View (spheres, rainbow, N blue to C red):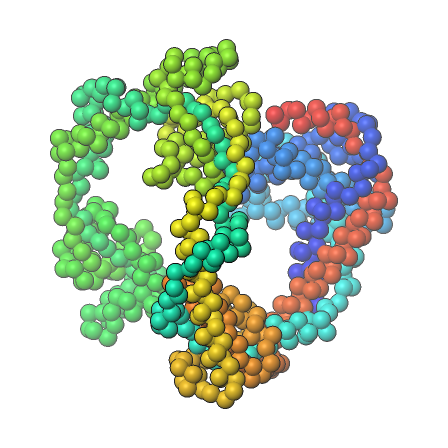
Length: 624
């Protein structure tokens, strides 16, 4: 048990390295050449190590964000400093391991190396050519990589020595499990304004004024930006471009598979590991002792896993003729497929479809015209950029090019809805509008459909409380809603008082529901978010009323709840024991992480760290 726990602990410990790596940079200086960017004790941080680690970090973040990060963006995220910090920590710990005589032997390095999947061929064997190629792509020599691997293994041994004695905190785990898994039994009922027939009277002037003054933030306009812009989209000039009919017919022929489709079938396919199993399943279906759904369940699958969608006879290969001859609902097979023997169920017939050129022409014409319009805009970009470079204003662009002039009082809430200007529907425009600074020169930017735009910030209107008369309808609606919520809650509190006095829920006019074993982590549908937390604050037999959260019911609602009982977790319950082990492992991991972070920080603070800022600047420049 302890060994398994410590293996998990070591995984958590690694997470501490990044944070610790940024500690102790006060002792920096300029040293070395462009072969190194700094030293940690007697260990060098080479340019190759730094660039390889930074490239890897940028690639990893780019994959997470779904877009390629530029180096300036990586710097804004602090990736360069994070990488540097990680390298400093690794070098400091490697030096400490060396001082303590902790090292990984050649055999250990070899075993680790040949076990890395990145360097294996399709058969799972270590491949030297793959190894050399991967290192070249990473900008590392074999000696550098193997030296780094040796240091990494030594650091792992050091980690194990530091955290190996951390015990699992049983007492703390028991306490937390008791807190997390104790249960409450509750009876509750919901009520709402519609069922109660609550309809407050329209608020008078005093109530309207009180609502307006009580929640000024609700009636304060957002910051807006007065922007003048010039733009040109393909749609604006699409009607001006000409499209040759020969091109239309050529595109139609290229898309013929989209417009002329043979008869198709909606089919499900159930694959078996061998012919015998498939044949037995088909026999059971034929004799009526099973059906396709049961066969799917027997394979441990859901129907969605067997869905092939609509397919042609050719798509089905050897099964095509039988499937196309089958009636809807029939199961045929087994037939051999590229994934094994399979049964097929035919669910529906889709008739052949043919869209003649004359019907497809408008769609094809729009597509070609849009593409031509994008090229026309692209051809104008250089001239427009030259105009801007020469000091042209947004208005000048509208006068001297095909771009159209517009103004917008833009707020972040605008997304191009019916009431918004059309340009607000474009994400690049919204991003540019949000980042725009007063006095900035207009730049030509692109829209996602191939359009272009330039804009100028004329003024920023700060948030302001709108006059009561302009938001009067909203204030009245809010006042009515507040009065309705108050009336419903008052009714619920009165019923709760009756139940606390001895009434049953039914006698209080409520339809009760029960939850006999709620833990703090359980979710109950249709009750306020604070329901479970409130329940665990109550005394046994106590009754309370809570308002429903906005949106849980039309109008307003409340819930009446009574705590019927409480129970501690049962130590004999396997779920409780599993939770105790999980909590104990996490606590031990946290303790080990804190211990190792403190140790790594102490090691680094006692190690001389010298960073060559000139070398770092030179290397970083190469990334731009």
